[in-house]
Image (cartoon, helix red, strand yellow):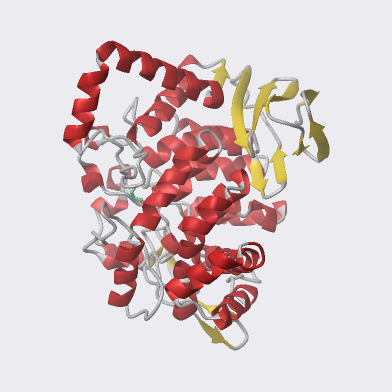
Length: 489
Ligand code: IFM
């Protein structure tokens, strides 16, 4: 394979390769560039991040993107859920064909995920690994890693978002549906009904690596709910519209129609923990009853905590390494009121160390959503130049790829307020005080939309494609050419 690539390169010659590369990058920036006026260092940071993500990502459906990109030996080149929750979103809306390839990679490792499911005593279905290269689970430590069953739901979420943004039925039929069904089976098998609660999922770890093996991790349950109902929807949709293909998949994985009924029932009855006294979503069933970490008496040099305390000490406390439920508030922002988001955000902000580089960008996005723009800006500033300025002191081990894509999300989903839920495309831009202007581009269903924001105005411009309905703040607009509105405070 390497040989073939080299031979092809020699045949093409340096000048041709250079020309193609320049063309390729030009096309990428035309449909993906982000501009920030008023802060040259930030502008440099965001383009540097996008470039790294683009160049580090495998585009052949056999390779993916390592947590450290192509730049260092940290995490041994392994791929994580970072891809589905941070990197694929950037590609879905800038270069969807790459998002598809990354999802196809999961399809190509589905057999390994089936093997893993059997090792974990699931008779049917597929369980994707926490860290991997060829599809095999490579983690030797289960509490804060392989117990993260949410990976299955994260992959389902990425498939859903990719499908909604592209309506790529060919992908859904050929690859997506089988992944969705096989992974949904795991949640159905894992969960059980508890009277007074509903469908419960025990003994898993959520995204937060400072809290391990708990019952009803709220993030996992909410993601599994969405996964199970989407899997059921896709099964019905394909059965109705592409019955031959449906029968093929059904036969291949021996799918029983009753399973689909059970997925729907589990989704409808999924238990999402809620604390009536504090009016917040606890991270899991036991989170709020644990002692809160003594942040006041923890010296600065003892962070990140994982390098200074035994995991068991950390697990016994209320302390989060990274966004867990706060990530759910962003991914499912349509399901919660602003007041609820504020209560949850404020609670988790007090107990989160952000020892993981995957965290500040998510807090920044949710801070924007609830109108805490200065706070959002402070969080965002920790992401955009993390590797250029070596904020974590470990860039020598490689870049923080998820954070890099997260900085793109911070602008687009955070300050730009972009959300897409099927036919609903929403923008609610805000501008931080230090910027004069910023702009970004969104690809959605063959349209290219440019969003330009300055201190007074928001301009939406349809650069490519036909009329599309979008929502700007609370106003529904038919975007055909260009519209301009006052910037909300
Ligand atoms: O996948 C992440 C995890 O969520 C936090 N620790 C680092 C991993 C790789 O980036």
